[in-house]
Length: 429
Image (cartoon, rainbow, N blue to C red; front, side, top):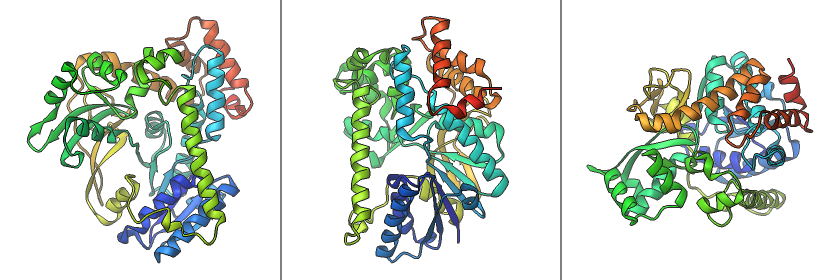
């Protein structure tokens, strides 16, 4: 029996689909799952839905709920981290404060609190269950994975969904995505298509010709970034790179459409509304004891890689996955070994075996990879060293910073905002 601990399990949209996946994986049917969250009410909802789903499936899975993280970690074989400290309300308060200081929706300082939590959780794992694998799906993946690699001795993998973006591209080109092979590499939320094939056919030259002729219809942002950087940005990458597309709402509208894309105040509000509606449906489902949870969570595996990776590590069911891991052995040449990179890896009972990638060309390395790497270093080292000057330098590097005082005043206001007491202590030394 394997013990799987889910941190942040009060988010039923995360925990229940994973339990659904486990219930559909016979090789892991004797696992015990511990749902962990600090929100007792949300944890009870997730536990309610999980228990009913397992019972309806006649699955031998067992599970429990726990508010005490350290107690839950005892004897853990896998620790899944999807926790978002402070939730969306904390992140939105941070974004609004940034907007008030001239950084429209653009600062990521709320991730600093996440980074501290990642560091603490990895320390608990190192101390309580040092042989456990930790699988992180909470953001920031790039910074968090690098911080953990540099400061903790744990077996750590981080995951994201962005690489699935190649499927939309295949469909647009007229090919079945399930018949195509794609490689997207780089840093999380900053990945670039390095290979795309359909059997023996290299689709990259076909894609390039159709983009330049206008035959392949892409969003203005994706097309311009492809032409500028020389590689196709995949998944969330078009949202994250090219700072000049995110200066203000009008600029976002130009590149991402009428609502300014997902990262505008309009687009993100729509996302939060959808999330709230989904949570309300799950709350109603949990309150209705006569309904069947299995009617909502159908017997179909999700696209999440978490359960298949666990199966590969436990039962030697070999598979190839998109992972974020330290660049040990120089998976991507030109990037240090203690930097977390996103790449493909074969996983089996012996562990994670990354697939080496060719180095980035000089053009994209200078334009995209080095600048993003620098931002990561400032965030990671600011947290690792409790260094407020690096925090300030992080904001000084933002292209929208017009003066030293603007950046300094924003940092002062950010540390003083309600809910940031922990960060004031962290950077108070």
